[in-house]
Amino acid sequence: MDYKTAVLEGCKLFPMQTFGAWFGNHAERACVNGAALGGLLNDKTAAWVTRNPYGTIRDAFPVLSTLTLCPALSAACGFSKRHHLVLDITVHLNDHHYWSREKIADWVDEL
Image (cartoon, rainbow, N blue to C red; front, side, top):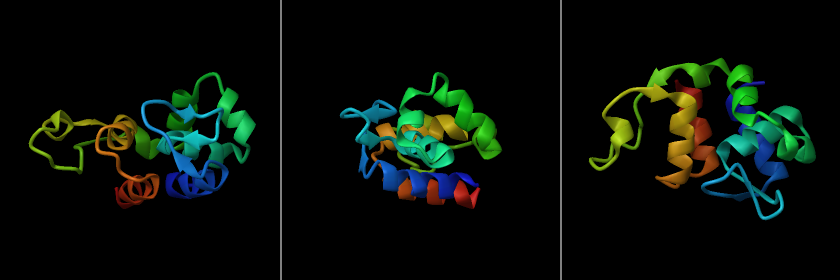
C-alpha cells in the first residue's frame, strides 16, 4: 500500500481532520498521518493506540524519509527555506497551512 492509498482509506475511518494532534475527539478525527496509520492498519482502534505512530508510518512509507522543501511556497514559511523530511512536512502542511489530507496525499504521491 502506498501513502496516498493509506491516507484515503484512513479518511474513511476518520472522516474529520484534526490539527495539532494525531487523533482528536475520542479518535473520531485524525490528522493526515493519523489517517495514513488508520488506513495502513485498517483498524481505527489499533491506529489510535499505536505506541510509536511516527516510526510506524515512517517505516511503512519510505517516501516519508526523503528530504524536500515545503510546497506551500509562502514567504513566511520557514519550511520552504531549507529541506526537511517529507514526514515532517506532512505534519507542517496539516497543522500550519491547513491543507486537506487528500491534498497532502496527492502532493506526496507526486514526489
